[in-house]
Length: 157
Ligand code: THU
Image 1: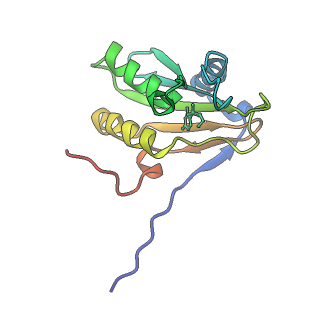
Image 2: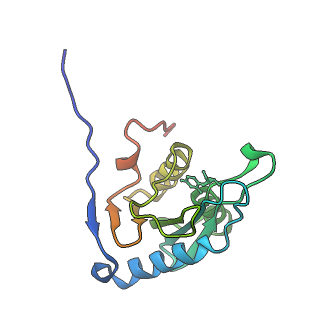
């Protein structure tokens, strides 16, 4: 038997240490939380995706009275990004969230399993790493790729 380990590398930094594009993505993700429709959970999530054509696409969680019909911010953003610019490759995604008290989270929220699965497919299509920025009140976590968040991802290609 062989014991192996999977690890997720990440850095913790703050806004001032980011590049201008990273800062813009963080700003857009935070801004998108104010357009969340979350009357049930009151947990407001925003996502911003940078494309290699220079566009930034944002999304927020959109809930529904029939709860499972709602969609997370990350999937709102990635599905719209690919619907709008099917040729463009993702380069990075930022995710920000405000809790039920409306405040930014101390420990940043991280994409749910379904969003990781959706994002990993766009990372595969891109053919390179898609950087993930998780935005907290002060700390920003930088994960080098979606795949690092989803070891043993299911892919058909
Ligand atoms: N949510 C997201 O938008 N992204 C995630 O990665 C996790 C959860 C949303 C779904 C729901 O509207 C609310 O946050 C509470 O779970």
